[in-house]
Length: 221
Image (cartoon, rainbow, N blue to C red):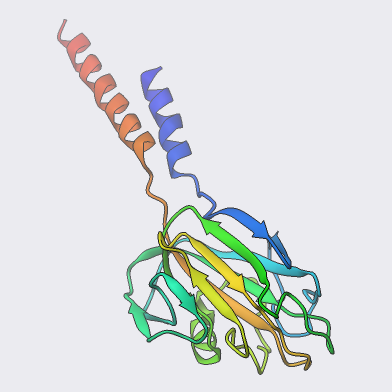
């Protein structure tokens, strides 16, 4: 009985955990999508009211170094100094896609906040420039479409702002303006630390050890 209980606790502890705790709407609606997606510009995810949030990878081991544009807490009107996440780290990866209907501008602007995403683990890096998004598409979901990428894929243009909270768990999209041309879409890739298995694993390990100890004691009688 103890072994079965320990196995159940261990299985629950090791189940994939969602890396985003809360989506907070403001001037836009943040909508989580699942399954294979088409993130090409002027694709099926065009909207003047919605920003799409997608988990690309879960418990993913970085196969190579990855260049990021922002990491430290603060508000970014442009990309921060380039930093590198080293290969071998285990991470969760998320993708944010904003593509308005051609000929319009929406999702905020003029100082309003589009919305915020609260993660349950620390943000390790944000990628938002054309070059680094292109270079990091290998991190994306293998069943989703990322090409053709928008010609103007840069998150930061005009008054666009991204804010990483002091505890590095919340990303806020401020004053976002997506351009009117058909080649415009704003995209952000967020790399987050993988949740630790936590106390459930320790509890399961302790129960297994206790059960083994009792079996040994019984066998001696």
